[in-house]
Image 1: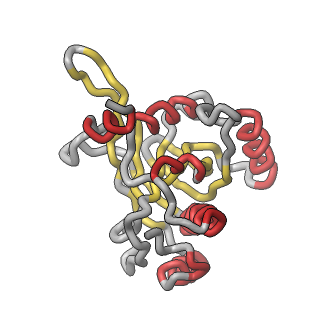
Image 2 (image 1 turned 135 degrees about the horizontal axis):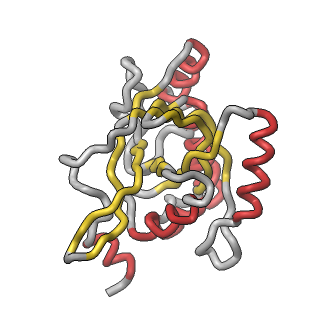
Length: 209
């Protein structure tokens, strides 16, 4: 049995009856940046994006956290080491520090990638971010869903899901799992224009099929 089969058989996400206590505000700039990153890589390969290459779309989340209130404001792209298993931490630190000079109020609060669902591989990658923030978030762009704007500014119809890490007791052992966290889209006037542009297919970055 392959590792991929194992990931598909054993979910690393707790049932929907278990919810996160986080209050997340997702800014459109982050939505646009992640969508553009994914679309650019798709165009470069000129093929449907293969699931086993999800790690090619990988980046960091920048924002603020005050207790259980989180804002995801911006992102930057990340790179992997040559082995393809480890984040290029030197690159991450360099980019983080560059952004810190321009946006001193923003901290590294998690990471993003593209996949249909979280897997054990995501759990392994998630652990590499705990050295930068105590409770990193995972924001997942799901390529099987088409991005559609939501008039009320909620997460409804957006192909993104947010997760935080927790632990589950199973067979008398503790294992790392994800719990889904609800979010709202934070839209000021300028950001609302960006959301409308994205919802209408601006830049061809909103249809992830």
